[in-house]
Amino acid sequence: MRVLLFVFILISSFSFAQSNLYLSFKPKCLGNDLILGDIVQDINGVSMKINHFNYYISNIVISYDGNQTLDLSDTVLLVKADANTFFLGNYNIPNIEKINFSVGVPEPLNHLDISLYPSNHFLSFQSPSMHWGWTSGYALVLVDGKGDSNNDGSPEANFSLHTFGDNNFKSVELPITATYINNSQIDIVINTNLDQWIYGVNPGDFGVVHGTNGPNSSTMNNVNDRPVFTSPFNASIKNIDDNGHIYFLSSQNGIKVFWQKMQNISYYELIDFSGSVLNKSKSTKIKDDVVFNDLSKGNYIFSTYDSQGNRLKSIKIVY
Image (cartoon, rainbow, N blue to C red; front, side, top):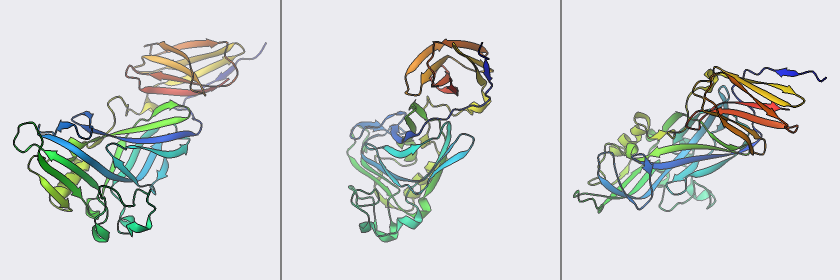
């Protein structure tokens, strides 16, 4: 008779294979998706219509799996309201915990010759222009549209905020949980809240302000002082290391998975490494076990989730 192999694993994560990593900055206004050309309201209820909402992101560092880091600080992205998802590369980074990034172009790059970049580079010429000459460099953020100056609900007054200056360069640290689409794709989604970014200015009477000081400086301060960049409401920022343990028992007929101290569990899921769901069942027990029979030899992932679909804990199973 085959001896049972008891594998006790007290880890909060599993190792994904190399996965395509995507980073998205979703434009929002008052919690709703921001669509260019649609009439929306600022935080004070002033109607506005946004034609362009562009900004640079740089100095990206992703922390994962116990504060290990993926350093992408040499990457510069130009985020637009209608072009906001970027492929960052292929990595093995389970259990993403936080992301650090900066808004703007780093000073060493901010005053170089723009004509030296190839036409498809984010630091090359753009339309509308994101560059204001060697002295001022690139715009950290550019917002163009119209605001409602007479409170009739119809935006008609030009509204243009273009901010420059190394002194306005801001850094952000954001706890984040990635969405693991399957073992070949990881998505990191960040909401960018325009209403919070332009807090303190009135789009109805703001006019055209391009510069480094005054409202340009104060609205950039909002990046650190207000919730301009936030995690989606359904992304957990809880430290999952504190929530329970999973282990499994292997036999010739299958596997038996145990968990304990699993707070807020709503269901569990077993998938293979192709991403196919083999079993998905409800369970709200803090301590429980489940048997999976007639499995083929191979690698599997067992995960527990809360009622919002946030992953609580996962384990890689080699059978």
